[in-house]
Image 1 (cartoon, rainbow, N blue to C red):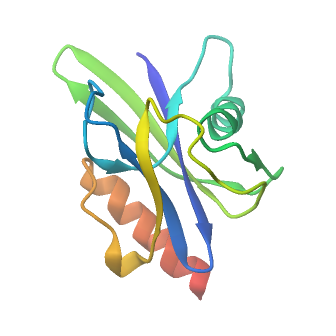
Image 2 (cartoon, rainbow, N blue to C red):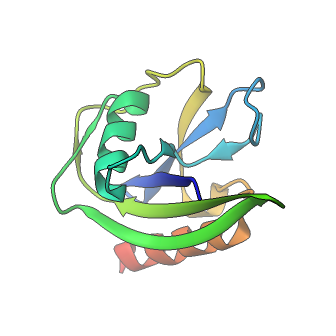
Length: 134
C-alpha cells in the first residue's frame, strides 16, 4: 500500500496549510497539510523531513515531530496509508518552493481552519493544537 506523510507545522497557535493547485489529481483546489509519498526504503520521519525541505524549504528539528494519526484513505481498490505528524520546531522560513503542487501557503488559527478532506485528520490536528496551547 502506498504511504503518504504530512506535517502540521505549528507556531504561535497557528498551523501552516498549503492550497493544492487546481491541476492536482488528488484533492485539487483544497487546503491541506504539506507532505508527500514515502519512497522505498525511507522511514516516515525521513520522508517527512525530505518532503518539508522539498515543499517548504525548511529543515525539521530533530525530535520535534510527534505522531498525530494514521488513516487508510483513497478510492476503492486504490488504498493509501496517510500518516500525520505535529511539528513544533524547524529551521528556515516556510516558503512555497513547490509552486507546481501548491498555489498558496497560509497560516491558520484553529478557529479559521477550512474543512479537511479527511475529517479525522482535522480533529486530530485541533486536539493537538489545543494541547500545545495548554
